[in-house]
Amino acid sequence: MDDTTESGVNKERLENQIDKQPDVPRFLADLIALNSSKLTEADARLLEVLMSDPVRAAMENGKEVSSRAGVHPASAVRLARRLGFAGYPEFRTFLQNNLVDTGTGDFENPAARMAARLIRAEEGKLLSTILDSEIAALQQVRTSVSDTDIRAFSEVLRDARRIFVLGRSHAAALSSLIALRLRRSGYDATDLSSQLHILPEMLSILTDKDVVWLLSFRSPSPVIVDIRGAAALKGAKTLILSDVNGARIDPPGDFHISVSRGGVGQSQSLVVPMTIANAIILDLASIDEGKSLSALDRFKAFRASLPPRLSR
Image: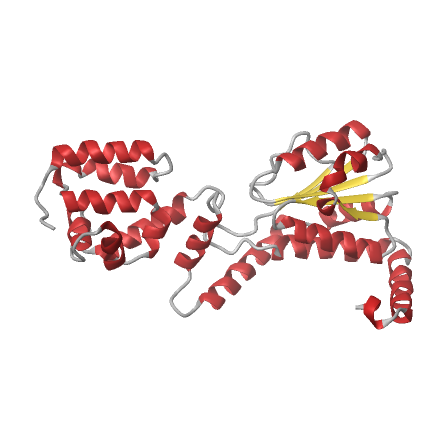
């Protein structure tokens, strides 16, 4: 492919491509606009590939991008130099850094979130990178969540007639675990995440003696917002455990713990909220006058009496 300059045709074509791809990162669109007069037909084809999937492009080398664009492998290097970089590796680093730095809430799509984490990981040190991420996220909990916050949750749970727990997406796994642990501790706890098909029936029995514990991560699910509204109408107390992005719930909960699960490109797993939930349930056992401990002993004895098929 000849890299002859066709700037007028390329500029219009690239502008149309940007218009067709509303998710093209602003930094990439600005870079194209700044250098449009230098671009060739091969450059245009490469940039179309980059704009169609910026996340994938940030993970690939010049040869792979050129292959997808159907141009000579050296074309990616020439494009990078026309855009002001020493070579394609430097251009790819620019793409990676900008994708990570401009990601909103660690990106809004799963592929981008995973790509950001891979970008952060050094070659051959993926596990170490994830561990460092989790440790850093847990360390900041020391200064952002207090024992007073934990006690506020555990006191409300202790005094509740019934407890309803709900999390969506990945938080549904934590919702199920919390409800399971509360039931084993002698509390009437229901995981609403597994009861969505009868949600109106479940919400209709709420009273001012009940508690709704909501888990909200990344952005509040419409279901989470609606259930918070229903709890408010029924007078039930609401506990909310969220990350920073999932905190925007109206009306606000009666008690709310909001904590970062890590920055952009970090793992943002359930380790942080699970640790907080464990602390709340442990604190509950310390203030409920032996209710949790007695219930756990009874459950252990009952399970031991069951046939092996039922006790697993």
